Amino acid sequence: MFLGTYTPKLDDKGRLTLPAKFRDALAGGLMVTKGQDHSLAVYPREEFAALARRAAAASRSNPQARAFVRNLAAGTDEQHPDAQGRITLSADHRRYANLSRECVVIGSVDFLEIWDRTAWETYLAENEEEYSQAIDESLDGIV
Image (cartoon, rainbow, N blue to C red; front, top):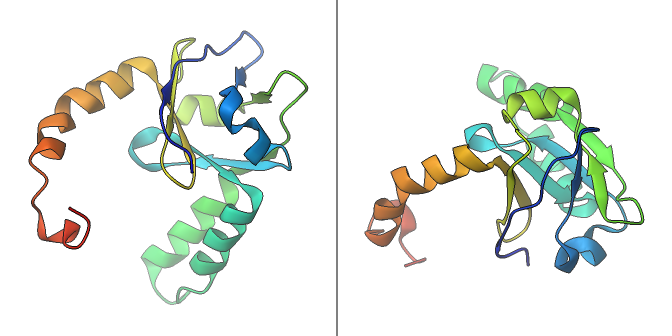
């Protein structure tokens, strides 16, 4: 499982060093794609393949499903961490997530999220109280 919060820096070449504790799980390759809330999602290859198969099974007659599959496929980049555990984030991914030098990598159970540090701090400030009061019906059976 991917858990925790880490604060690596993006270098001038668009490379980000993955947290050491996740490198073994991602050593066989990973997929970087556009995530929710203008973050990037980093999946182990197998986990991404399962997600892509579920997405591809959606009805192509549904415009939202078509758009999701297109964006998922077009916005995904396969990466293999180098010897230092770095991956290169494409210019499009850096633009989408508005990444500056200061980044945050968070574990999201079965994948990682990469955020611009300021965006992550803003997100936390806006959503932390909601988390502490989590009583929504959509969380039934979880909390």
